[in-house]
Image 1 (cartoon, helix red, strand yellow):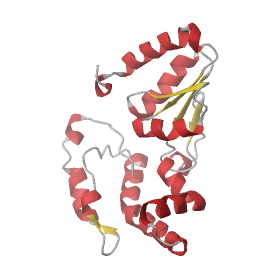
Image 2 (cartoon, rainbow, N blue to C red):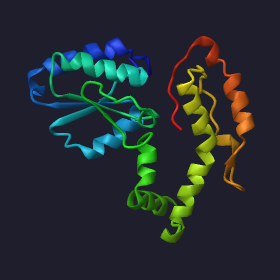
Image 3 (tube, rainbow, N blue to C red):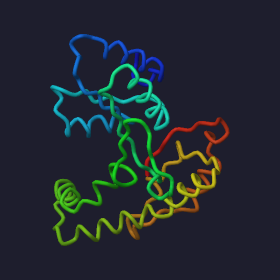
Length: 202
């Protein structure tokens, strides 16, 4: 079965069997949102004593899966994007769940001077004195899209961002996004008519 065809329940059933196997006794299980998160977070854990996997279905299914699995196996934890949670006033207290420091792991990495500079230098060779300017340009470029997604959440507008990518709308001349065109895409997104709730990162 292809990974994209595995349902939430398929994955939970598979994990329940995996956790009950004698060879996994004492293993720590860390669950994240997607494949790119697996590749990143596997770098931070000792994989001899820990397994890092994803649970399909987005943040809510990740949280639900951690709650369900914790009932039968205590060494289960989840890591999810904080998204806009830290902008609200309600305390986040989901079972055995950890939030990224900022909106998502990408924004968390951008916020760390040393990490951000290492990535920029690795892929561009741009002098470190210019790195802060690059950071500010990135934040300015995504600002309007970020506000739209935040408004969508706090006002329950039910806009769907899946398939409304803006990468081709970014100007490399003025580091801006054609926001009017992006907004049109979101409003005419066919996923909005089907009730799709897939998560797209900023």
